[in-house]
Image (tube, rainbow, N blue to C red; front, side, top):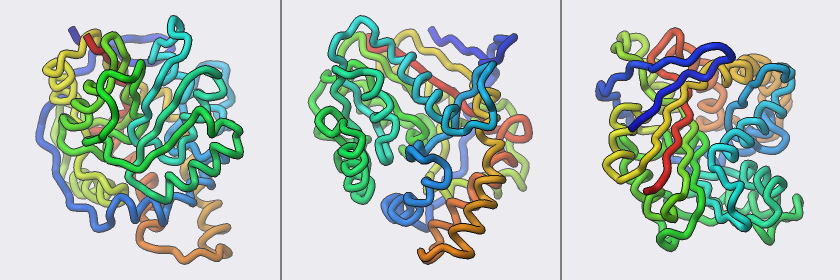
Length: 310
């Protein structure tokens, strides 16, 4: 059974979704090149190198971006449901510079934490950040493909992908989900937080062009689609599948994009020493055009999908 909810302070409703095929643009820049060149620029977004959007709860200061980014880490951790496990082993599939892993390390002093990324620069930089945070003995980041790993079977209590599942292949992200299922122990939890194509209407020609440009900028073949994505979870044998629309929770952090972009253009483009490459310009453009294809104007919305391995 799949449970669908909308995360707001007052309402819960089932979202109607569509499995309409998405365009599959061919990225002009490889993933490794993109994150090697644009990766350092994420410092303008987060001092801790949280390479994702934030999660807003009532009572929080919407002007404090770092707190919302950290809250997203906390929400993912809560959904992993590790309270009864003394020494959990967790896998971050597409960990970036390991900010979420370090967040978990602060909260789970006995956890063993592993992140996987295809970008060698991220592995090297994450190692330095882990050592500086004094968690290098419990947090490891390795170079590898999260769709085809050499990690042991049924070894992890929790597996998650925070804004990284979009880089997997296919509308159903079949290879990623199969690898997550293989890595999880029975009863282990999977958490995916990312943008999905979910509305029950087609894109306009203009929106489809913007969507293709967005995918090109962020080196994405195609975004996941909720219907085939959840169908794949069921086919793999996952149970307790929950789909939660958290678009409104994420929106306050998205509102920071114009200010961060302006600040970046002044500090790093006008007065910065690093050359502005195509990858760096794409990283500037993508979050600016994102609202044009996101709810309520477009078919893309931010969801948290959770499931348990039977």
